[in-house]
Image 1: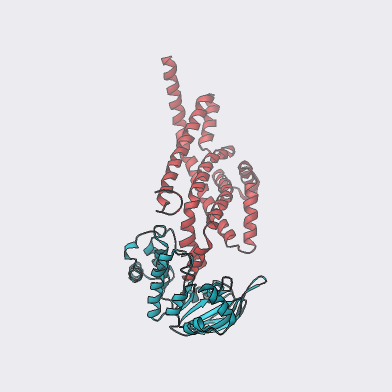
Image 2: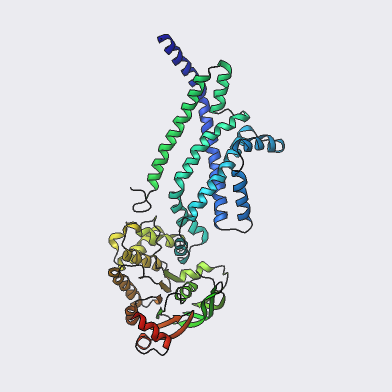
Length: 227
Length: 240
């Protein structure tokens, strides 16, 4: 019995050492693609908020098309489909796929946040001589942040988990590393338990960070959250 | 100071402001009264281009407000506005509410904007609320912050759109006091209000509006005590 336990500990430690170098890659893919998603999502949502002619319609089409297609298909399409002409490396293709996919979800979250700000706020800002951009920057966005942070953070955590899908094109992140180890040593149970635990540690840590951010952006007497 | 010529504003088939013309002199306080839906607020909102104009023209200090004007926010700098629903920025402390537009529009330094803000908040009696958030204030306090915020831009004209209508009765006085102080300092003011007592005391001229038209206009003593038009008389008999 003791022998078995000792053996298991050594095995888990061995797998752990193999997996750990892949964790920064999962983090890097997630952060880079989410940064891309934030920028694209912001642009798309403001275009829709301002009802920019033509562009606003295209932005709506963008959101619906992207959201209607599975992420795995995005990855295949960008890496194999577009990759045929544009020759992306794995990292670029993976980040583009996850980033574009999540930009559509974020755009909808941002739009609901921006539209939640009352018309009176725009009128007050405009009556003080502020331009449309200044109003957005100083009045509307700071207020919608509070609304938008919790659901956006959920998307961030979801994108961390979905980054595992890019393992399919051979990008060596956590899930890929797990498959490699398993392929060499056939330790299926232990490998996938440990891969799961490592994802869990990351997502739970992020959840804590989100809670902290929510508290940071809460304002006394504003919104429903008690401070 | 303000010249309005044949101003018309429609909402679909409804003519909210119907071919209205009037002038306001520098330092004059004009109170607009009338039943709800008579176009008072719409008229006021046209004066700082929050409302588009369908026909006619408005000259603010020789600056013409036209349809689709490019420098519209330049005109708004000259015309401050206070709203019925306060519209303070809830994410900013009182002092920051008063500083924001000074910083981003007037490009004043932080120190300058703060000094100006403190001075104005003192004038409206809110020095102890400088670091409070709007949600922590009473309605009357909110409205006085809104007045200070508009004044911080050094407007030449101030518009007041039913600023006491959302207030509890005991708070109306403090807001009217702040407005009286402003009138005494010679500010050009246009006030949409149901406070006829205030109009009588402070207004140089009262406009009575109904169905988008100015029915009657005159000094408060004449318009309230001796209205020429039957419609004015009908309205006054209902509200007095």
